Length: 225
Image (cartoon, rainbow, N blue to C red):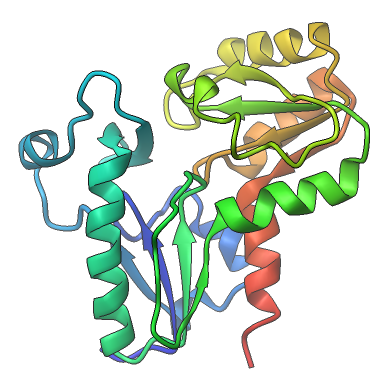
């Protein structure tokens, strides 16, 4: 199958949890959807991608809705192979469905939309001196966020709530924690967070709540001719 535009998740495609949100901005029926873990069982995924002690952790979603924890280093190596394959298939734009930090992904000619290169500078430009509260899926990611958000004029604060596992009580607890830490704007920093979670937090926080996936999707929409 040839496509000029592709989405690439580090989990399994298609991402039915966020496709309705992305479809608001993008013609998803005209796009190719590829996942790093496509066709793999949970046992195969654990054997190949399980994070070792001290490794950076990424989180994604399988087709059955399960959350998986992945080694960031292993994911980046395999992502590059997928990106090269998509270029060979004719993709002109590749939208990465992951907000994790990647330092070495490359394309030959295609545009690669990496949320970690797009979202932090955009948020920094928008919020100025205001303090940003960042929600991440797992607690290990808090320490890993320092370099990602170094452009912010005021150091951010953090709370944990998985987009795949958190119930309303957990989200409410995260919201309260961010308020106590002085957050004035909140960023849901994982592709898996969705509109219902944003709306719920808006009612709890009464301050702006931004979805990383919406920011990237809006930019991607501008690239579609």
